Amino acid sequence: MLGRFPCRFSFADLFETAQGRRMTERESERFRLLSQPERNRAVKELCALTRGTFVWEDRIGPDGRIYTAFGAPRK
Image (cartoon, rainbow, N blue to C red):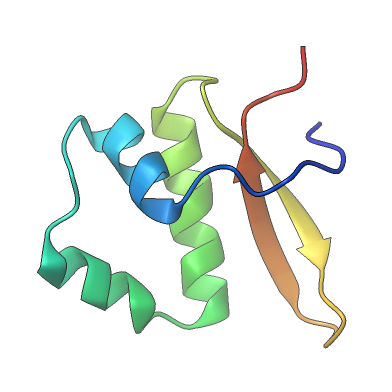
């Protein structure tokens, strides 16, 4: 579990770790245009590809929507 952690990583960091390369401008734009559920799914899929370097946790925002947070696992 992540617990409360400060935001230290960007989606671009997650993408690069999972895919082994930097995001293209086009990929970055496509991610920006995703709905929140689609973003949540993308984060979970990329975290799985990192084999434990990043982990995710669903959180409920002040607006009642679910947001998938990610970060380094607690040691």
